[in-house]
Length: 83
Image 1 (spheres, rainbow, N blue to C red):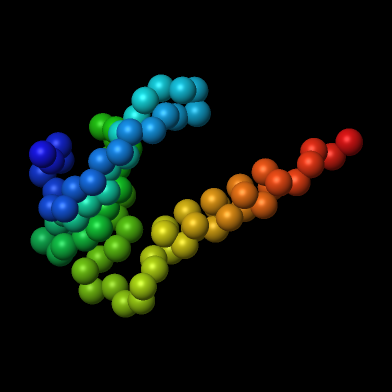
Image 2: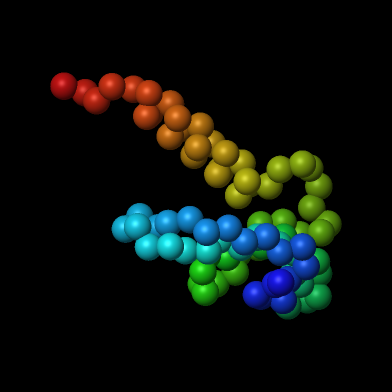
């Protein structure tokens, strides 16, 4: 069942920084010009487009930034605090 009317919608539940449950939805939808786009939304917040159907390449800047952030978290989490 889709909640936003998107195609291939995927929703998962996680928590925000204060512990409240939020849903994160990714899927395909149409932009105002009718182009097929990949998008992400958190709970009932706005939708952010991260890839247009005509984009080239395997990864978008948003996906690259998210991956780099997780890698940085892993690196910093394994570093002991400065004394």
